[in-house]
Image (cartoon, rainbow, N blue to C red; front, top):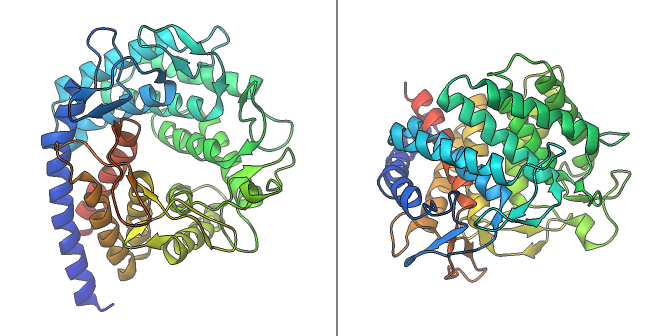
Length: 389
């Protein structure tokens, strides 16, 4: 790609940014702030339809935390700071009151009124609590109680889920199989805390997870991240141990590109390989599909919304670091692919699933996707603004 073509791709990406941010500010944030918040019980609804919320669904901790995160970042897009701060404050109050267990970990599921429905504490969910606390602190300003809650949760993770070897168990009591995905989000949370808390334990946690990724999670032959592992961090026997998710190649790549520790060069090389693999093998019909096997054959040819956001983030970060024009082109294609999911009957909702045949599945829009969307559009705004400044 020539310099002129790269400049054109960047300008076209700016246009995509304008369209996507207009949709986010004008439709998505207002809709999810009103219909997506339960003004009777507090907390956030699990999903929305064209007729409104799907009432009385059990509420997952990860959704509560992700929605707090999403509204904590609203001010950066120019959406109402007052409304966002209220939703973050109310969402935190609901989360801390209904999900926190006596051992300082957080239960996975409650009813709308806060009754416990599942006392298990999953590593994946704890990571999102840490992320929500970090972004809330960034939005609301220094909050000593949020800082203390995060530090106490981090200590509880080491006390109750840390393995004698590398990494963490998958939950209490469900320790096995070991999972790559929760570690990825724990890295994301640690990276969010490093700039706002001078406690070195956050950098130590991030470094530990980066080392785990480089030494155990990433296959040294192919360079791909796998998903499911046994107690010794060997891929599970059978098809589960062979799964390679394009979305997670992109997401791990984006996170490893953000790491600047002593093994930062190795992390960046691994990240570039992950992004390359995701793009080379995981794109069908202009979108990132759900699953491959370790020989890069297709296992699940559907394309959920969230891998599109991760493709966009990874391309943008690679473009900003390498200044390689092909990553701007990749980001442009990813942005266009993502925007397809927003062409719904009710503006502000989204499709979650695109079949292998290219048809969107008609189902309620899951609130859990908002985190992915907000994170990707924040990266889009930051990287494009930086490139054109």
